[in-house]
Amino acid sequence: MADTTNKEQWQPKILAFLCNWCSYAGADLAGTSRLQYPPNVRIIRLPCSGRVNPIFIVEALRQGADGVLVSGCHPGDCHYLAGNYYARRRFALLQRYLEYLGIEPGRVQFSWVSASEGGRFAEVVTKVTEDVRALGPSRHLNINAVATKK
Amino acid sequence: MSALQTVRDTVAGWLRSGEIELFIGYEAGTVPLRATPTFIRNPEDVDRLIWDATCENNLAAFLPKYRGKKVGIMVKGCDSHAVIGLLQEGQVIRENLRIVGVHCPGVVDVRRVAAQLGVPVEQIDDARIEGEQVIVGEQTLALRDVLFEGCQTCTCHAPAIYDVTLGEPVVDAAEGDSFAHVREMEALSAEERWVRFAQELERCNLCFACRNACPMCYCNICFVDRSMPRWFNQTTQPEDKQFYQVMRTFHLAGRCVGCGACTRACPQGINIRLFLDKLRADVQELYGYEAGEDAEAKPPLTTYREDDYNDFIL
Image 1 (tube, each protein chain N blue to C red):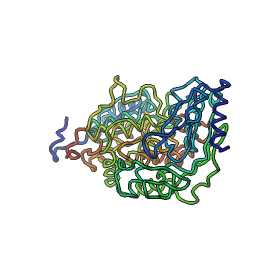
Image 2: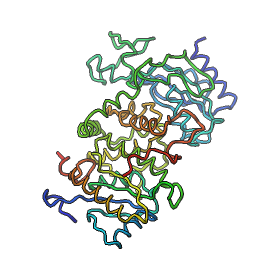
Image 3: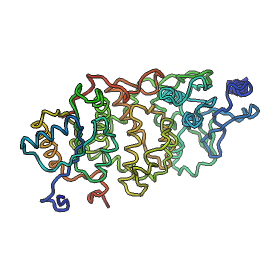
């Protein structure tokens, strides 16, 4: 685990919820293709992006994730036909809502990555990692954050 | 015979004929400017029923507790939208309901009364409503100045679903954006918005009054009560309070009818509406949907369109 107390050595911790059929396979392809991407991401495999309950995302932030990435199949490609369509509605509202409450834009991001898009997966992870790195350690909703404590 | 007496007689008739076994209405409360919900099973008790600007509870919150029973209920305009929401989600059956819809000019906010008089809420002990005026001790205030914030921009004075009505139709607030407070918050910077949110939530003592007052919060096991997995720690940590409010409000996305019952129920005066109304505004903007309007409509998060808003995806 990265040392989160030392500012210079700080590395963002990013939790990624990937759907089993597309994005997880995309991550696998990135690996087997020997593509480089930042090692800051911890992956949780789920059956579908539709399985991602918004509480997972908020709980991840609460437990100290600096960023959260949710990735699923492209619209129309869902293994369960429509799981990602339902998920998209929830995520759109959640992302706007969290930003409304003051969570910095970029902490919680969503993407569609298919099983053949290993390169795309590496790009997405790089982008999210850099966005979160620019934002710095998570300060809001984080039960372990030092900055928000009085 | 007064309009209220006519309603009382109607309710007594329903109870006598067995059309309903219980009527949920309001009676005079023990605290000034606050009526209390009353549950009438006996036709002789209907004279307890009252209606005035102190009837602030959303009685629709009781309906899921009487699932399958034949009940009568008194609803204001906003409450009637909650009844529609419950019908939509299959929590109540229209045939089981007898609804007294009230044309509601708005309900009084005791905190505003106290603020106008410059005294703590607890010190208001002799107060009553007479017509358009609130009389507190020797002083008189105009009722429209001390209405609940949400009532001042209300666009649903008239009940949307009813069997009989009470009161005269009220004209909706002419102009006035009902999401003005949301736009104001959106105009702040991210950090300012967080401070606003955190400051409001600092006062939360996790009493769950907002959840209990909410007509749409009827989950048999709420996520805060769940032990497997245990999502929530009931501590005084600000992050736990924030987590509770974020998740409770988000569970109402596309379902909140904006009645404001949570905000009125909060003993700490937290402006919960400010957060929930963002969700209502977004649901309207993105999915063109307003909760509690149409009992046949599908709630926005239980359906989708292929061309839904996708710009936020990387």
